[in-house]
Length: 281
Image 1 (tube, rainbow, N blue to C red):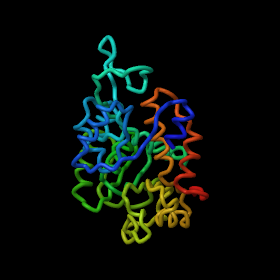
Image 2: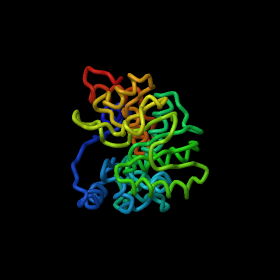
Image 3: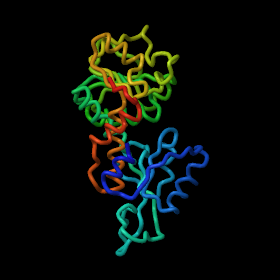
Image 4: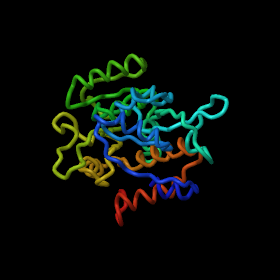
């Protein structure tokens, strides 16, 4: 989605993918910085690791404790840090990395737009307390949900996250484990559903999907995971993670370029790239 958008904005850039082992992440970031890259996107497992590797952090990265977007900035006249992508000519040698997080806003926007659901005052069941689950939990709590239920394979990790939420968002009731009674929204922030033989991300013996109003699965390939299929058949509203992918990527492009991202073009490019002739359900 980024390259068609970059072309539409008239930018002489290319968006490329690189495999980097976590042990060499710091070197990779410094290398991109020295080569005067405009910026980077980081995916798992780099997002939390990168926080300590940035020269500066945007409030979004500090707030959610993860970096998925890096913008390189050069020091211009008057000691002002200017995004590398804004220079028309030679880029100065003094460059720093600045970390942002666009994931948190993207998930709330996707839920609002694709499920017509505003999370404030809602009861939400969140599956997964890892990197993506942690950011989602903190963002949902910041939106003043009424109750948040955290379920994770390693219970201690969910408990640690619950403690953090209680400290930072004291008005939110947070619980570890499955709820009793119905919830407005179930969010899957685990990787279960990526592979055909994956088990369901929730224990059907402890909670049933027909007690849920809407289901959001961060996975976008396949377009319909077993969880989403089961939820649709139970009459729930459903959405996959393509919208979250779109919105976080569009926000990253705006951070690098200072221009509004062409969302419609990016969505079409995503659909074509991810699903080919198919369309997300």
